[in-house]
Image (tube, rainbow, N blue to C red; front, side, top):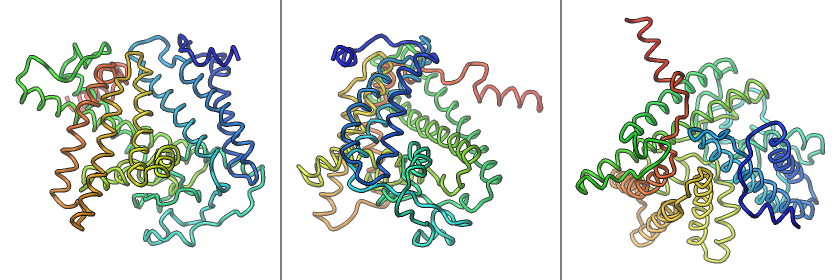
Length: 417
C-alpha cells in the first residue's frame, strides 16, 4: 500500500536510462501487451478486469516518473509525447478490458488492398477471418494490435472511414520510396511552420520560457488577427508533425515487420476541405483515437445522456489527453483553455445536429466550410495560447544545425550558388 500511495503523489522525474526504462516503462508496456493477447481470447473477461488496475497504475508511474528530456528544457516536449503514449495505452487497455467479444485479426489476401481490387470500399472478399485464435497467433498478432490505433485489418474498427489511396496497390519498394519522399516533405514543412510561428515573438511564446500569443500592446483587431495567424500556423505544424510520425511508422513496419502497404492508408482526408464540424471530426481529421474516445468517453455517457452525452464524452476524453500532455511540460496544463476548446467542438457538433433536425438540411457547402473554420480557429486561439504559455510553441524540435530548412538552404547554396 505504501508503494501504491507513492504512485499517487507526483515525484521528481528521473532521467531515462536502461535501468529506469526497465523499471518504470517496461512493466506498463508488458502488461499492455498481455492485455492485447487476452482481448483476442475467449473467456478472459475476469483476467482482463483484474489486470486493468495494474496497467493503469504502471502507466501512471511511467508517465509521471520518467524524464525523456534528459533535463533539457528544449526537449520537454518529449515528456509530452511520453504522457500522450501512456494515456493512450491506458485508454486502449480500458477499452480492451470491457470488450464484449474477442478481437479478431483479418488476414489480407495477396494482391488486394484495404479497399478491394477496384478501390470501391467493398471489403467482403479481401480478408480471411481466423475464427479461433490460438495463443501463439494471439501473441504474434499483439505486435500489430499494440500500434494499430485505427484497427485496420481487425474486426473491431466498426464504422471507420479510411481515405482511399492508390499507394496500397504499389509494390513494397514503390511504397517505401513514395513514403520516404512524403516524410521528407512533411519534416521540411513542419520545421518551416514551427519556425515561422516562433519568429512572431522569440522572446515570449516563441521561447521555451513561454508566453501568451495575445499581445496586449496591440489594438484588439491587430491583436486577434495576429493570434489567428499564429493559431493557423500552429494547426499546420500539428498536422505536419502527425503526418511525419505516421510516415516514419509506415516505413518501419513495412520494412522491418513485413506489413503490406495497404495496411498504411492515408491518415488524413483533406481536413481543410471540411464543410461541417461533423465532417471534420468525423473522418477528415485523423481517426487514431476514435475507438478509444468512443469506448472510454462516448459510450459510457451516451448510456446516461443519449447522443448528446456521447458527443460530449468523446471530447472530454480528448480534452483529458491533451491537457495531461501539456501538464507534462511542467508549466501547468491550462485546463480551462484545453478542455474549453474540446467542449466547444462538442457544442458545435450538437448545434449542427439541432440545425439538421429543425431544417432537414445538413451543414454543407461553402457556408459550411466557412462555419467550420470560423468555429475551429476561433476556439483554437485559446488552445494555442495554452501551448504558447507552457513553452510548447517555443520548443526546438531539431538541433539548430540539423533543421530540415537549414539543411535545404545549405544544399541549395552548395549546388546553385
